[in-house]
Structures are given as C-alpha cells and as structure tokens.
Image (cartoon, rainbow, N blue to C red; front, top):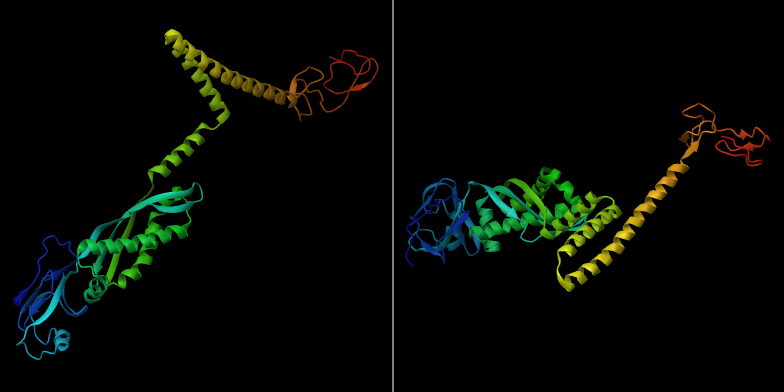
Length: 348
C-alpha cells in the first residue's frame, strides 16, 4: 500500500455530509505528510473504531503536535515508520431544505372520523456542530459514512418524534392544518437533544403537509356528501322519481319482447318504490296539516285562525280565553264552538 503524502477531499456539490479517505481500508501516513482541509471542513483522524484528532480548515503537516492522540496511540515518537488510519472529511456547512416524509401512513385515532391513516411531509436544516462526536456516533457506532445512510437515519429520528407528537396532541385531521407551526416546534424540541447527542445542531424543522391516504380521503368525501344531502328520506324520494322517469324513457326506446320485459319488470319495481315514496310524502303532508291545525284556535266572533296561545283575536279583538254562552239556553261552550253543546243553537 502506497504511503499517502497528501490527503484532501474536494466536494464540488457541497452536499456531502462526510467523506472517507481512503474509500476502503486504512491509509498509510508518515509524520510530515500533508493534510489539506478546505473551508467548511474538518478532518477527523479515525483508528480502531474511534475518532481521535481533529484538524480545522488549513494546510497541516502531520506532526506529533497536531495529531498527538494518534501518535501516542501507535507509540511513534518520530515519523520514520508509517502508521495506518482513516480520515473523515466532515462538511460543517449548514444543510438546508432537506426533506423528510412518512414512508408508511401513520394510523391515529380521530375524534371526528374514528381511525385515520395520515401522511406527513416537511423539511429540516442542520449543521455538524461537533465533528469528532459526529464521527464517533455515526461512523463508529452506527457504521454510516454515506450521505444517504446518514440522511435516512436523521429522518427516522424526526418521524419517530412526529408520530409521538401527533399521538399526544389528540387533534382531529381537520384541526391539524392550523397547528403546523406548533407541531413543528414541538417535534424540533423533541429531536434537538437526540441530534445534539450525535454532534448535530438542528437549525430548523417545518411541517409542509399532513394529508389523509386515498382510502381515508374517500371516507371523508362520502361523509361530506351525506352531510350535504341533509334529509335522506326526501333524497331517496327524489332519486326514485328520477329513476322512474329514466326507466320510462329507456323502456319506450327498447325494442322487442326482451326490452319490453325488462322495461315491465323495472317499471313494476320502480312503480312500487314510487308509490311508497308518494304515500310517505302524502302522509307527511297530512301530518303537517294536522299539526298546523292543532296549533291554531278559531275566533268565536269572526272565525279567524289565531295562534294556540293567543288571548285575543288578531282580526276583531274578541277575547279567546273565556267560555262562550249560548244565547238560547245560556250553556257555556268552548270559545271556538260553532253550535251549542246543549241545544244545538248556531253560535256563529
């Protein structure tokens, strides 16, 4: 294995979180080799599963002064023999507009809809605050050093806290859009400590949408349609009338005995349904008329219909609360009686 005289890494995209040099295995270095650390980078020397010395941006000549932990570990006082190690170049820029989302719907109890399944999406921003701690935790403990692996791990932390936050909130689906800022702030507070334990500073977290799955959306649409219909009985009567009219039209256009038979069968069924609907409507109308009649009282003088609780006639002012005496036999009758209960004299 060749001895690395100069070790550096240039990230043109600026989006890689960490880069391992060499890509596989361990590199061989001598004291006196050069390590070039660019702006917004930190070079972390790693050996035997542990992050050791960290070099800030600049050109560094590897000496016992700037990598003392590594030199002490391998027991080299001078740089005659090469030593093996890996270098992780950590990007210390702020990573903004990273996406997070639910790979699977979250099942929650909803006070309005019962059980719902929701999807959530948003963005977050972070920066590596402690490169040595980050390499120890992410690379040494988790074994992640590819950007996609690290991003997936950070998203899993966010989704875990989001699910916990939504469960504790106990809010309905229709209330959640007004709480996006509060939910984001709560998740950020829950995630911040976990991120800090990895050497990461969570800069921001946003919730962009929380929406139902297709199945839940269909159930919501059906419920909204039922609410828009209002009176289900009247709606069914309307649908029966429409169906009867459509059947009559299609029956006239159908040809042959087969079409006539189908039309006849449909007509019988729809006729029965329509008869029931009309009967129900008529009964409902009669009941309404009876209720309206019971709710009024006739004036004994001018026969004007007045509200049941009225004390005087709205038309002539006659008192409605007293008894009405028969002019022939003086028998007291109800104020709205037309004939005497005793002698039959016309009271009108």
